[in-house]
Length: 355
Image: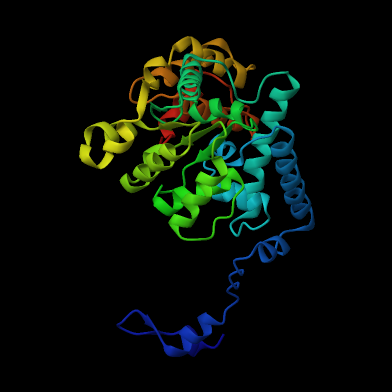
């Protein structure tokens, strides 16, 4: 590069036109096109093989375990439903290698549990028993039921056991359960097409369910809009043997029973059972979950995770599990000095956690 190109305009601190032009042409890598193919081809051969193996392992796991990929995403830290689904379909356009590493680590833990003869990530708890009761009552009495509690109690994991049953459809909320998004989600769950106006979609749902026994279970139902809930009540009325279970965060209960009651009158009048799931979270259940996930941890470390899991305002199963997984990754990572897995490490991990 010539001296003129390197000169800065004296007194202004700004580059000369020649300097700017030279800088623009200086070996700056081009941004990759936002396609799977472009991101994939940019990887080394070994990394491409690793991504391929992870995609196949994910697909095989979902098929073998009859897993709901939307619910599976919630059990992988920092993994969104759309990201996991796009990766499985080879349509993801983000950082493929990082995503593959996250998925591969989670699948390895799942396979360890399966080899040990334990249902993946599931431990029967008071919370799961209460969710079972909500489903049993809804199905038996053909009514709507509602359960609410903070994220991480195990609501979504408890629902996995119902995947694949012909009388139930699990529906994970999109970012916002507006009217058309609600209809499309139900159509997908029933294997119907998703094109058409809201009336067309609603009638296709009613025709498909008809007089068949069907239980629709909505996870993250706090994302419903008033119009979508009203629509859901209308579909419920038209189907003779339809039952509905709504599960979500505490704002679900506040929304339906405490905010502008006239907006939710239709659905509120059809709810026959309500359960505050957080009241059913017990330390003995959290301890069982920690022992399942971290069998190699010392007793004092396990008990610290249990405390984190039941502390009001902080804790849920998910937060305690994430802390344990982070500590395990730190201990297993290559490093100059061996790091001891102790309560101090767990305290440091928890202090650094955002949620």
